[in-house]
Image 1 (cartoon, rainbow, N blue to C red):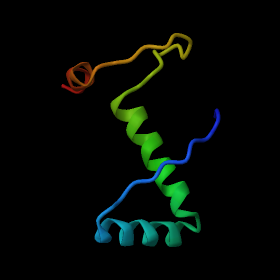
Image 2 (image 1 turned 120 degrees about the vertical axis):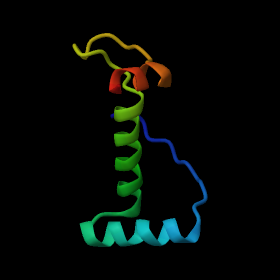
Image 3 (image 1 turned 90 degrees about the vertical axis):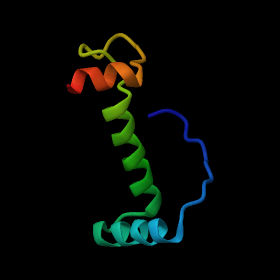
Image 4 (image 1 turned 45 degrees about the vertical axis):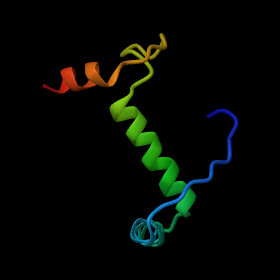
Length: 69
């Protein structure tokens, strides 16, 4: 992993409460839960590497949806 960048964002109170519960149950920080959620979202929705893992490529959301059909 490269350099970390601090990001600030707002959540509805209900989502923040859920985030706190998930972190507590998993014995991890809320920051870890958010990082893991973002990592999974990006890997699922916008893969950056081809199957070989060697060549960078951005796949559009439309192509991602086509693959699932």
